[in-house]
Length: 107
Length: 152
Length: 247
Image (cartoon, rainbow over all chains, first blue to last red; front, side, top):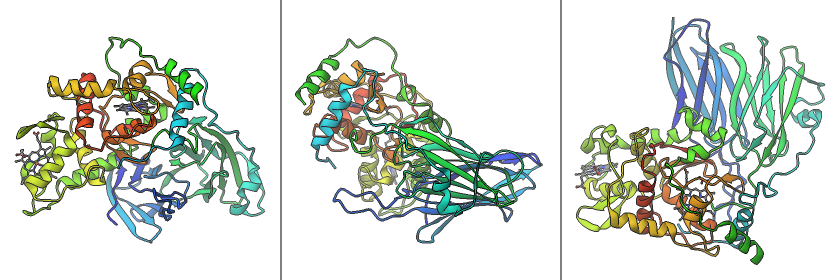
């Protein structure tokens, strides 16, 4: 997948802090109910899973359905424990996965 | 591509214009059907008893665009739920999302945007580690009419 | 229907254009929309800007060049002003979109993207975004601006309404679920919730034409570029917001 994604992860954080993370992906989240100009149903095509891990351990994992808006956005909080990688993964209806990694320095 | 201008567009804009500045809204906002938390959550939690409380749900009272309604959901405190569930009962597919928090989550809290087909009471539920289920609902009025669009 | 029309014509009587500074569409937007625009990580329009930045560096065309190979850093375009006339064919007006398309064709030897294609919208948004926070730059051209103003004041469509009747006389009033703004252009290309994506200014013009049951001009047409030019001049002093968020 070559999908545009954006995440907001602070470059640095203090140990023990709750840090807000924001993640957004460019995706139509077609719910399978809309019709094109010729009246044909546009097939369902959504991102159905979002996951965030911090140095391999789970932060949050979501199942998404058709009620999630186009270009889905999620914000949540991680506990800053140690420096390392925060990894994001979006999975679509075809099983294709888009990944993104950010780094955080914890002092 | 220039698109055909339908009779509906003309009538839609004319009706809308007639209301310009009149301080009233065209009757786009539908009445909100009352919800039974137990009935709405049955497909997810089966016959488990549903208690009111613990879970907090934030929605705007009025949203101008049902395609993107900001929603905040969470369980305040240190106890992490097994999962959080959001349901939009009046949507074609009501179950909106199911969220699991892992050991690195600092709070059982998330914000997102929902697509709501019409005005309704959205339901949020939390299943706690002891298996108990807590729920709440919040009403939101969607003002954009479903059928009369002002242009594309 | 006739009564409705009579009523709306009454409501749409032209008011005297008050002599006050222009206000951005953002000032008329709902708190939810304003919050989305205020945070780059919540503004989905930024996804298009990101895509545009990637396209800036992507090689293509006959020489395998990218925008960056000839123009360097995209920040260098923060000060460019469009619309303007084609230096080689002064009768022809160009806006940023048609300028980029022309550059692909003439200088890059690559096929144009197509007016409302995701690529062209993204690239235009990325270039305009470089000027965010700066006053909209306008090229002075009395003839083109006058032509654009004529379009703005021209009554059209089955409802016989001009742009000015909504965006001057009725700015601030509710039209169905939307508050009519002054029809300023400083946020474009803009993310529109109803589009679920970023769209060009000319796409917005088409929506406004269709709302009064007028046949829209084609995207990128000379009429729309003149209109765009006049609107830029009319909004002088406003700061670029691209990518704005609108309902």
